[in-house]
Image 1: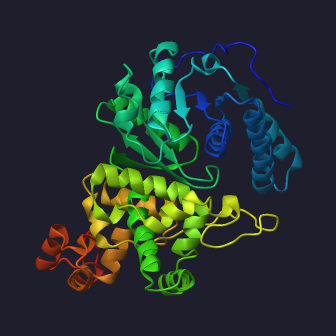
Image 2: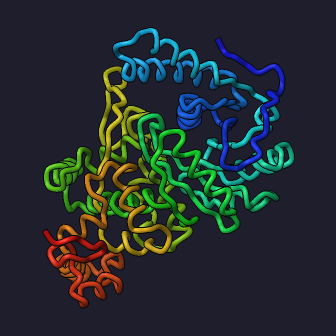
Length: 408
C-alpha cells in the first residue's frame, strides 16, 4: 500500500553541512528508489518525490523486496534481526507527489529524466522552497553540473552525485565538483557518500565524468568495427571476453545498458568535446529509431526472451586506449580514475595500473602502429606518455611509470 505524506515533515535542520540525516530523492524510478534504499539502510530519513503515484508504489515494492534480500544475506542466522532491519529501514521512507513535502531536508538528490530543462526547472523551484542549509545534487550521468545549476542562487551548495546501476549493489559514487561548489559542500557530499556505503571518487565537471568518459570510446570503436564489417558482433564480444578477460562483450554491454542511453551519452560527449571518437554512429541511430533498445525491449544487437531472461547484475570490465585515460587526467586524479573504473565498470585493474603493468613503452609502440595504419585521431601520440617513456619511466619493470613501485 502506498504511503503518501499528508503534510510536510518538520525535520530538524542540521547546522553542520557534514551532518546529513534527512534526505529527499526526486524521481521514483530505478535509480531514485535505489538511492533512497541505501540512505534508509544507513539510518537516514528519506522522502521520495514523484508526480506519478503508481511509480511511487512500484518503488516502495521494489525497495521492500530488495531490503528483504539484503537482510537475508546480512542476518542469515538471525531471522529476528533480519525482520527488524527491514522494518526499520522501510519505516524511514516516505513518499509524496508534492515537491513541497521534500523541500525541508539536508540533502536533495535529483534522479529524474536526463533533460537539462527539466532539471533546471526542478532546482529553481526547490531553490525557493528549501532552507538555506539544504544541499542540492544531481544524479545525472552526462549533463553538465554547471549548466544544471545555472539558474539557482545556491551554486556553492550544488554538485553531482552520480550513482551506478543497480545502486544497492554498485560500490562506486562519482562526486562531481562544479565551478562554484564550496569546500564545505564538497566535503559534506563525500562524507554522505561514505555514510551510505559507497567508495567516492572526485571529478571536475567534465563530459561523461570518469567512468562514462572512458567507456564511450570503447563502445564506439566496437560499433564502428561491426558497422564496417571488420568482424561480426559475436566475434567481437567473444574476442573481448576471451582475449581481454571481460565478462561481457561491448555489444552485450550495449544491450544491457540500453542503446538509447548509449546514443544519448555519445551525443552529449561529442557536443561538449568535439572529439571525433564520439561522432554519431548511423547503425546505433537506426536501431534506436526502430525501437531496438536492448534487453529492456527484448531486442537490441541480440534477441532476448523477456519471460526467461533475468536482469543479472553483472560487473563489467572495459579496456580503453591510453589516449582517453590521460586526456582527462587533469579532471580527476590517476588514483580516482583507476578506482572509478574498477568499482564503476568492474575492471580487475584500473587503466593506469594496467598501463604500468603492460609497459608504457609497449603502449607507445601500439598507439604509433594503430595511428600509422588507421590515421584515427584517437591513436595520436600522447605527450605525457612519450615524456614518461623518454625518461625511462615505463612502468613496473623500471620501478616507476604512472605510479612508483618498491623494488623487492
